Picture 1: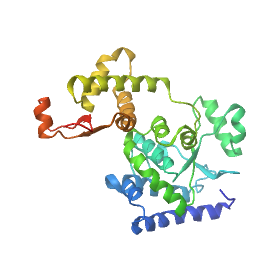
Picture 2: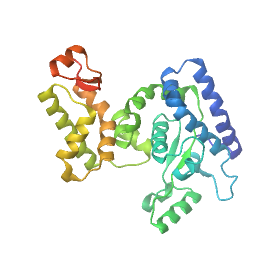
Picture 3: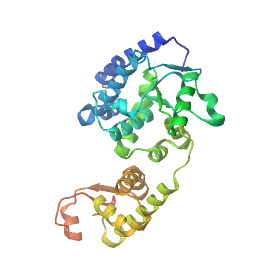
Picture 4: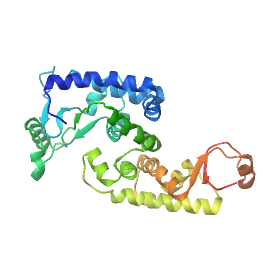
Length: 287
């Protein structure tokens, strides 16, 4: 980011939402607009709330903006603080929203570093890292807001379908699947590869789904999770962990195996003796 003063940066943040509103009204970014405005404008409201918070950041004497050459101005924000902004009180929902906004490049984030990478911290971020280390916890993430230009909005428009497909299953592994490892590391500001436990759960889910399709011709998301938890209960993964992995992995798995999910047709009901109308998973080239 080009070096600008703190006052200029606050004005940039102030102008962003007006720029975004004009972009939405123009109809030139239909996929991005649909993503931001879905579910009662949940993502849009959170983005707007973040902008309002960042504009006023520093009014509290405990808040200090950070500047680092190459990244620009950044502000600290905890999930506890996010739940007070009037756009949702669930921390998990905020976590997913931040992942989506960062993947769209409408926000950036920085995790204060320790050890040999501490040179990446600004002076105020180093204080934050030191306090966290002394308390035995991770440092709070710092966020930056880029200027919303046509180039950035076009990037967000291109990525919107992938972000929508991932949905609330979004996490580091799902972002990696969508944009690649290098970009995923930059988006999440982490450098680790896919977690071995995630790979383990993915392998188990793929194996079970494949078996269920071969034996029954179809499967259901609810049935898969219930069966895998029973089958692999000795591994000790929780229901939430299985569901998170399934939601994140499903788009990639469906594309690789050429699957679709939806209500069964009359022919499918007759073939597989299905009585209800609940959604089922089956090959695209089916009945």
